[in-house]
Image (cartoon, rainbow, N blue to C red; front, side, top):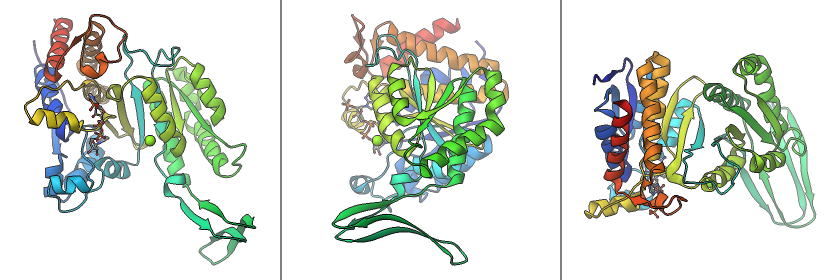
Length: 403
Ligand code: NAP
Ligand code: MG
């Protein structure tokens, strides 16, 4: 069989620990035999980040700006323990944070739905994709403990020195206060990423805030979304047969529980933090959750939502067998390959991505899976495979499909 040709390289960001092991297996078993894989390789493994003073992370983000599509392996975000373990020069920042800041994007997380792994919410038959605004609000808030009676005000001092004041509260006793902010530019970028991704994946977009209570703060989110929608997206949504739906956050939560899925749920920063954990745990497993960073400038970075699976890696280092689930990492590759295929108009690449995803799901649906899934599946007669056997089983199904 002739290998599928690529014209533009994918930006490949390698990572750490168990996911780095899976990364190589996936390339060797599921990609290289079928594709003339073209990538521009960046080693974001912690050792190399340390050697390059983290320049490699910045370079990989800039390469994503150049080529448009990246695929990323999970990476260690250093903490005190990692400083000693890897003898680091500095506690380097989270690569995801650095990349997101450079690409100015929104992260969309979607569960991989497969027969045999039923979500806790029985009517969720299609995935719910969660988009979290990753700037501001309570995450960049300023807080104060108020020791006793006194007045708290919000004060805005314009560049010309004029002041605008708003009373927060006249305290008669001790209490607490919080100030937070957001930026119209950031909200607009968030809105455009959401509308673009909805068009891209042909799914409805839901957005919700508490604008009835927060008449200026939350209402600004609602207004910015609506303005951008009306001006730039309404016609295209109509043509694509999808909808933009705005409602109050409590109404959205109630509706989500009764919906069948198949839409994107855009959330403000805090709502997204809380709801993404609810949605992902209800769908079954962190190992079955994909993540894509979509920038309003049209750059995409695909990855798995889980981390480097450290505990399994230590077992692997001791020579013990691991049963680590590679599905989300495989889907990061298929997402990136499909997007590359769409941008470069390479049908073969798009079809290959579809076939590899189907082969992966078929493997699970036929009862062959890793331990994490075997623990929660509703299928009977399950075979638990180790990390490598699982990838080999997918390859067998893929070869059958391609033959
Ligand atoms: P984790 O790697 O997501 O793993 C937490 C636990 O979830 C694992 O110990 C395992 O449970 C289970 N799990 C996660 N992915 C799995 C998979 N593919 N197959 C089977 N089980 C899976 O989170 P962590 O251990 O908290 O973090 C480890 C490192 O990852 C940290 O250094 C952190 O900084 C980094 N991290 C990176 C990213 C990223 O790059 N996007 C995201 C999160 C965390 P059992 O041990 O019970 O089997
Ligand atoms: Mg959280």
